[in-house]
Length: 370
Image 1: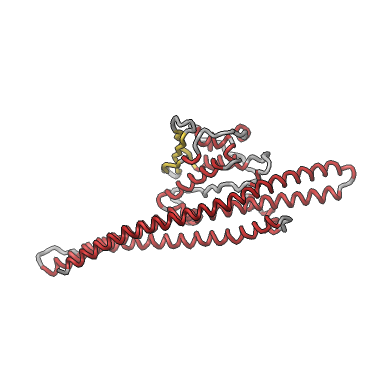
Image 2: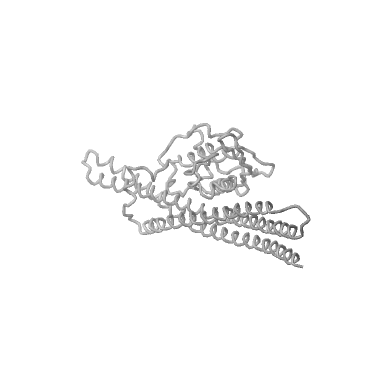
């Protein structure tokens, strides 16, 4: 149960940088993820299998540390939306890049989520992380209780607080910037996904045309027919190369910049969640101050204690939030820089390979003219 894993563990028994989600297995409508972690002692590895329910279990335990000072100031690593076998168009649209490539991008996204949780100075101390990575028994069969973090920004009764004026210019500026960046990043990811899906369609069309050209090949001794058939075969090879090239370009786009934009978009939403949790606490603090000011003598002492507790909690949240924002800003720049560099390197490698192939095709066509 939740209470059994709330305690923190000083050190994980695994190496965080080496956590890998190695495979995605389909079992009917369920996806199972195989996770390998290297033991900190260097004596071997942990091999566990987890479903999305298990990932949700872990996330809920991370959210549930409500007695930990400042926890609501944490920008929680964003868990991707649930993947489904034979998913609907709506679900696939929500997943974006993560729904492509036989779930390989999704596998990488889950691996990134786990590494970020383990690398977090606060979240990694939760005992649930150790259980998730090392226990042979899948923990997600026990449904974690819901808590105040669960889809907080979607709570209708709280939405009015989003427009509440902040008392701290630093956080007000962060909210304004986050609002702009969230929209821009989401739009960039959607537009880039459109590019990738168009490339995939072009690759399929090239493959179809390559196959169709073989239908033009005719048997017989007629020299003209033989020459035409030979040209169709060569041209088919060209379009097969075009298909392979476009497929590689699309795969490169997904595995580098596509995943980078997806993670950036989900992290902007995670920061938005944190900023909203903080503003809700600010509203509660202001309410407790007003109540203490207006309190009758018989209730004055009790309401003053409530106010002091709210002030202390809010100070902890702000302190953690400022550290999280500073870390997030540095990490997102590094992450996007890495995605862009990898994107350029992979596309350059693919372009060189394709140029060599097309040069060979050109030489073959020239040879046919002699």
